[in-house]
Image (cartoon, rainbow, N blue to C red; front, top):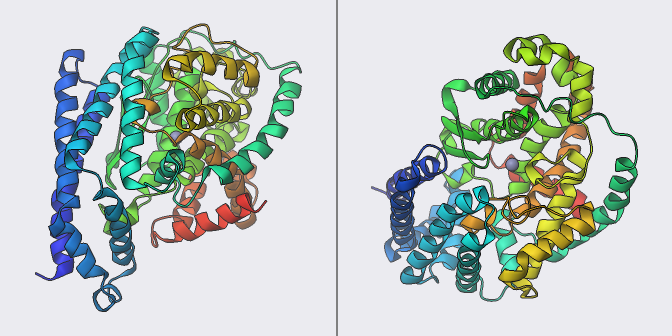
Length: 480
Ligand SMILES: [Zn+2]
């Protein structure tokens, strides 16, 4: 067996372990009974630790070093060169983390993942406070091992946006905030369309049927896809043949499920676009979550809030949800573009959503700069909500407990949502340049043409085009 085959063999085993862990995570977040959760969390800790041991072992690292030698490296194909170089960079950091600490770290994260949904459901900060404190300490310690010379928050951002720093994000967000705050104030002081009209009782089975229909309409390969229910909607991909999303249904608020489904559907389409040959390799994984979010938010906001998305399918939508028959598509379009300062990020409109992200970014900065104590976080959250959105959460479920990200240590992810929202406007510009008016494409019911276009730009043939495309966008945003 040559070195490359040896690496592929080892990666196959690692990928089976990752698959097992991700299935446990999926189960934990969707169907598992309450009393089964701790056992699943323990199983995830076991698999994460085994994966860590395998991939940071001397044997694995030496193999990567062998493959990095120019005479072996150069003849590799593009995807494998990418894989080897990336693994080497990552391993040099990860191998500094002691295995005992790693096991403890993963255990803390998994425990917090189990506690958070319950704390949120009960709106009980006191249930979660200790778990969050432990998570923050564990994350800080982990980053001190992997990136001892960097500020912790910079190294966290890098986990989701390779090469990006707080000062770059500050520059973009500060400029945006300066214009956005007065814009939101101007818009919300105008008369708004009636956002309440669609807050009618729609049974869950109708909502699920509608989401299924919309996903097919967007171009999802339903044989390589499934959807389940969880506290917080998310997307996961086990392989290019297995993209999964979750949704959350409120029977009095169907618009919430519709837009979560379109958003997560955008992520899943992105994953389905990856060519089979890159399955399970680093070339198929995206290190720029802003790019991933640019696709989900493109479908959610740019396409999904456009009336032309709905016109060709309105009759079908009304057949699936007969309660909609009393409304016109124009009324629906108005309702989904209602702007209002609200508490919950995932249900915020396109405009105020950006402020929800800036709020989280500023709080995360404060946490890792050490300027706020964990016990003061609910107060800081409420103060910032008041400052940016002029409302004060009525309880912690509407405030600090609403997002899942911190429970699994995902600090540094939030900025990617806003970067994605900036990129998706650029994506629209590019599509219109190459394909013409998006309104006309949608009105003709040709949404899958757009899907095929993004497929060309992104991963289908050349996964690494993605990197180049992103760098182009970075330069446009950051040099602005
Ligand atoms: Zn997303």
